[in-house]
Image 1: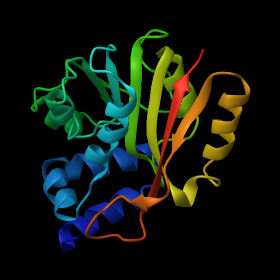
Image 2: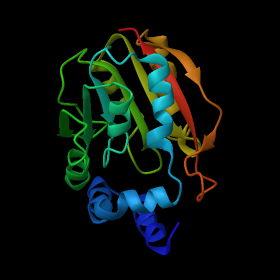
Image 3: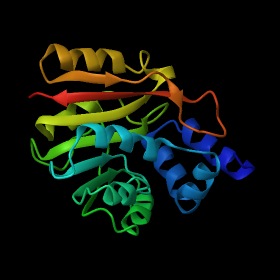
Length: 211
């Protein structure tokens, strides 16, 4: 990464509270896309392979959970998905996302808290780069399942360093044990950045929501 993006990425990972994290993203919003894409950040685009594999374009509304600046939206739109909602906890990032014109519903919301949609609202949710160090908690998956209809899909990545220590393995097993979802696919670990940050590895997970 460039010196600037290293500094700002470090500020994001160093945040000790939601307020610090929000401030870090607010300061980075204008340059986020340029900095991360220069480093080869691929997750907003890679996730679309799994979305298109499991979710038909006419299935219903999709939720980009932790959409940030909305990099995924225009490419989903190009694949024929025309009902795309997004949530993020950063107003500044959402403003950038709104400028892309691909989302018909953008809300400020925080993963891990109650989300502003009814039960069974979405045909699927996807989330990439959000379940990582110092970001959204594993408990956010439970609420995302609530707003996804039975027969819908969950597609998300988890950074490998927090899969166990962050409680993701436990939450995933609990939701499966309670019949909330069943696993369809789990990828091997792969790099979140094609060019820089070779140690940042994530695993993609796909589930069918059952209840």
